[in-house]
Image (cartoon, rainbow over all chains, first blue to last red; front, side, top):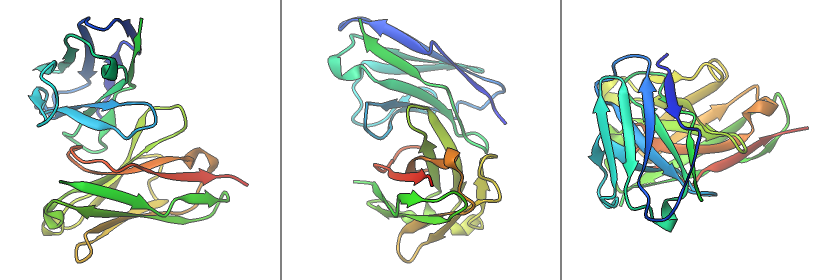
Length: 107
Length: 116
């Protein structure tokens, strides 16, 4: 199985800040990497697919990067609605696997 | 707009069975690979399994915790996918989400509680 190592587990930031979340995979996945946002009590929502492609309708302050087994999600100019939990997910092989999640909280 | 909607959740005793349904609309279901993901209370997302499209065999794969107990099927004539859950255990208690395998479309989830 492909292991996902996501960090940090939690992050405290202020409105207007820029934050970065990291996900490392245990093997090359050819950028088959999604980033999902989950607000409390809501279903996950896809933000980024293919490592760095922004899903239509997602604000441009969200961006993704990919390099080998290292992936990052960056959120610029944080807005109040961005405080949520973020998950990476590989869809290169089965079983699909998720990172452990990063809870982004307001400082 | 692509949508999926789960139904069939509820309370079941340990050892029992339950079948979840997922109705899809707004996309070409017959070519879609579909997945189930669960989330135990206060925990992260866990992949349950997925089924491929019929043109590549409607093959299902499962995560280790549910392998041999859970089964995914699909009915392309009704745009639906199903999750048959057998030999349920208390640690199967979770919100079960239906999604497209590519992660682009998610339902709101169906709550399954396994308790005596």
